[in-house]
Length: 151
Image 1 (cartoon, rainbow, N blue to C red):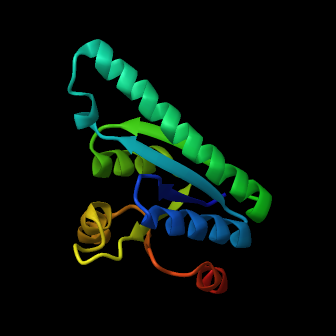
Image 2: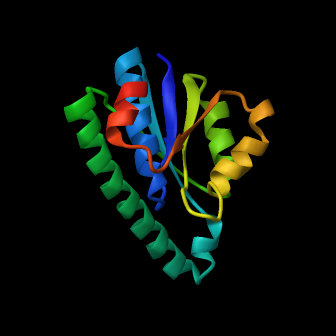
């Protein structure tokens, strides 16, 4: 089964990427992998404090995933998987794709502000020619109705 991998982070635009991935998976008989990457700079504290912060980050990610997973199951009939990795986001995204050959598409959400589409979209777009899977970039301000129409 082909899976759409989407990155869960604190950005607003990731919501549209998640919606798009779930809708495409539902309409194509695919699956969804939601990847969240905890950057290493979040834990440059004392060992005990870093461990507590790491666990808090994992709990926050799990709570967000639970909300999205419920929506996917209830509205789209898709049961997503959660993957949490630690490290540099781009490297971890590429490593997760390499380790999971059933991932067929990487879905990212593009920011709508004047600062550009966001660091992940910028980095992955630069590497698009050598990515192991197609990259789909979903505009962050696209309406739910438009997403439904194009998926």
